[in-house]
Image (cartoon, rainbow, N blue to C red; front, top):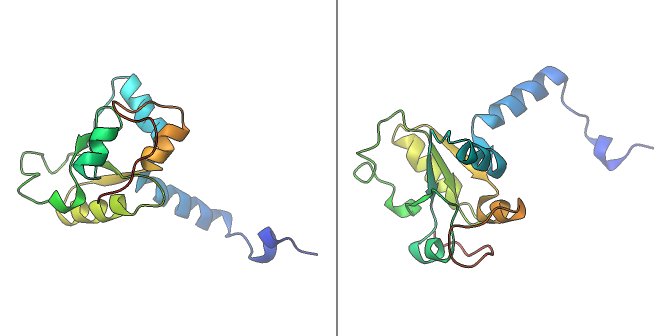
Length: 140
């Protein structure tokens, strides 16, 4: 009898290596962002893409608030094209970070998503900079 896990065979190791390595070029996690901040190695722009009200209620320390709808060439003109943007939204239930990543990439900026968003940040036990210590809604 085959388990549900093995019902669809795993990819060959070489393909799995390529797949998972490629995923890491598109995403980072809350722990890596926090660890970089704690080490003083913040070589990226952390962007909360939720609306201003959600941002005010609580956001990841060091983040700037640029709702996805405001990500334009004009709004980003003072950032060099080599600036790495790390975007996040409310959590896995929200695709605002994905939409923002598309806009940033289309504008020629390197971008990664902080997977988990605010929900992931709180799940890791990290505090928000201000406001309510719970996940807040998306106004993307």
